[in-house]
Image 1: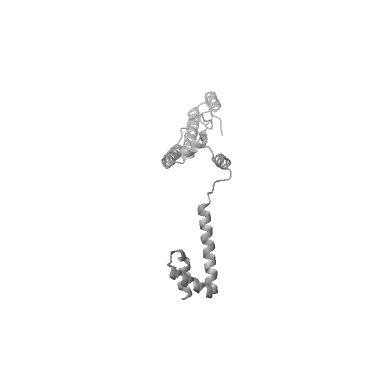
Image 2 (image 1 turned 120 degrees about the vertical axis):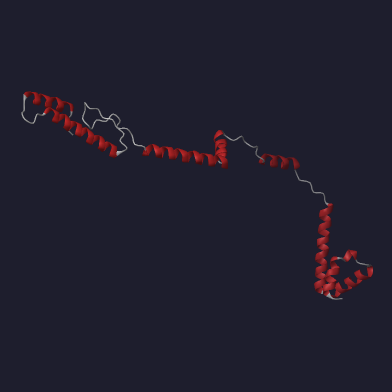
Amino acid sequence: MKCEKAVIQIHLLNELTESERNEVLHHVKTCHACQSKLESVEQLTMLITTAATTPHAPVNSVALTNRIMASIKEPQQPTWFERLISIAEAKPVKWSMAVVSLILMAILTLEELRPTEVSFTKATPATTVHRFSILNVKTFRDELKRHKADYQSSLKACQDPFAITQYNITCLREKLSKYKTL
């Protein structure tokens, strides 16, 4: 008998007929490699039957159960901050917050670009501003030019090109007290 056939039959030794078993055992006595294979298969079979027939119970099943149950953590209630974070992490909420942010940025940008109203009083110099927020420099310069023109025209109204009288000097003093130069 060849070793390859003998190795296969060694694994099936308990299921062979009496004549086949004797033939395998005869080959094992003559072949040293097949003899070591038979010994290892017999040891393995003995270990499997011993493990299958021996009842295995935990040494201390109560202690094992208690240790396992202690390692299981009870679910904790999330704090209000954790709930808020979990709500904010939802995709619809993220998108809505992004849209609201964009709308607020657009409103603030438009508010910054809108020119503000600058008002001056005639009794004070042109630099006095009731609202001190000047966002549009061009508007401010136009208002300043208009007030300077008003100032110049009011001074010209007091002057008589043909004669300087006491009346003209008094008029000029009154106008100068209303408009102070920059």
